[in-house]
Every structure is written in C-alpha cells, then in structure tokens.
Length: 87
Image 1: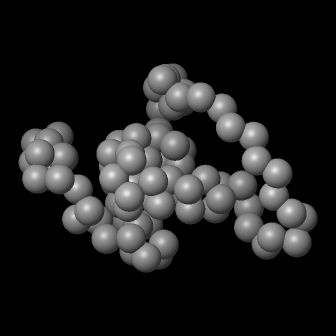
Image 2: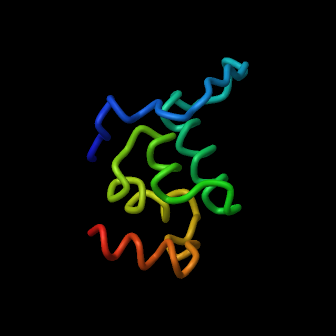
C-alpha cells in the first residue's frame, strides 16, 4: 500500500469529527475509506481527492475500490485522460 506525502495530505481539507458506536467493528482507516469511496462513487470527489482523504496514493486507492464495491471507471472522460497522462 502506498501512503501519500503527508505535506500535501491536508491541503484544502477540513476536519470532521464523527461519533461512531463502539460496537461498530471498523477501524478509523476503514471508515475513512468507506466515506472516501462513497464520495468518489457519487462524483463529489475526484480520484485524487478521495485518495488524499483516505490517506493513500491514487494507485493504492484505485486498487482498493473493488473491495468497497466501487468501479474505478466512475471517472469522467477528462479525469480518466488526466490520470493516464500522469501515470
């Protein structure tokens, strides 16, 4: 798994505190990944933004999308072309 550079991690992001019941059997990183994947799936975040939110590189985030039931090709054509150019 590739972590992102921490210098850019919180650029242009706000902090949200959630209260999660103790009996929810998920680690904090899993909760962040679930939220990031759903926002990506709904078109609210780009792949890069969602990866940053999850604390992962774009590549690592994209690899994990299937595990969370999200199709990688949820991107617009422009986003996909941009990712291809930056690969």
